Image (cartoon, rainbow, N blue to C red; front, side, top):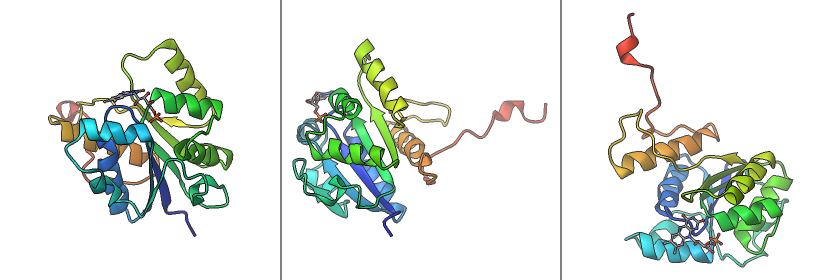
Length: 194
Ligand SMILES: Cc1cc2nc3c(=O)[nH]c(=O)nc-3n(C[C@H](O)[C@H](O)[C@H](O)COP(=O)(O)O)c2cc1C
């Protein structure tokens, strides 16, 4: 049974380091991790992080080449719980909503959608154009959960790492997975006892 398998797609938007924190968290949950990076994601990784790509790749149970359309995740007959795309570039978003599956990441999302599996997109662009917003709405209508990597401050986040943990927690919540470095809102202590 492959219900514990999760696909993580990483596209070339800014914030590729998010995928590293997510991959670690998914593995900590005892899930099998299938990892696919677009070509652009590899470039962004090199430009934005100080980690070697192997440090991300090493977290995966299976790492795929972006053009390997013969991979198991390219077929609906391979069971997974679903897929997370983090970060999701505007180009990958456009590919998802048009069904233009010219790489394995896009094909894997397309497969999850046709099989009715959970797809979570973490779109990253700033500002968002009308086209981006239109495509995000289209993705939501197709059944994708849109979880943008936004800053939150209600949990006392101070460092970039705090923010990353919070975003990872919000993403994992979509799969009913808990994350011990996520600090949920526990109510306003100042209003207690009133
Ligand atoms: C350092 C860097 C940061 C980028 N940030 C973004 C971004 O935040 N959002 C976005 O949509 N594209 C961003 N891009 C552009 C994408 O990498 C580019 O559109 C690419 O074709 C996306 O391909 P992919 O969707 O197949 O990964 C960035 C590119 C670089 C080099």
